[in-house]
Image (cartoon, rainbow, N blue to C red; front, top):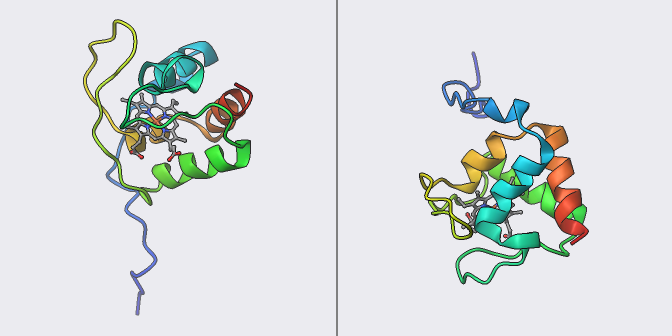
Length: 110
Ligand code: HEC
């Protein structure tokens, strides 16, 4: 008998891996377009990231990757970026493990 209780829904959630080619600066600019320059948000429904611990930020990104946190659809808040709204689960799934670690380190050091 197969036990399906532990099966993850990873299959079928095919997300474009376009970020692989992006430079780190583009990646950070993407975060800052919602979380504010330097990760300091002035918008009530978007949390600041600046100064949070590396491990804490990394843990949250992993939780978004696996849909363990609620993913609110959000529009871009900063700069001239009238892009299609997205959510943190999509954002986290567009990053590799190395990229998640890099952005966590960047915002922890702001
Ligand atoms: C389209 C807007 C948008 C983009 C782009 C975005 N975020 Fe978010 N992020 C949000 C919103 C809104 C929340 C809070 C709601 C939620 O938890 O879904 C959030 C929550 C988070 C949290 C949890 C913070 C906490 O204290 O609970 C982290 C960490 C995070 N984002 C990191 C990032 C990183 C790193 C990037 C860039 C790779 C990024 N975000 C890009 C909108 C965005």
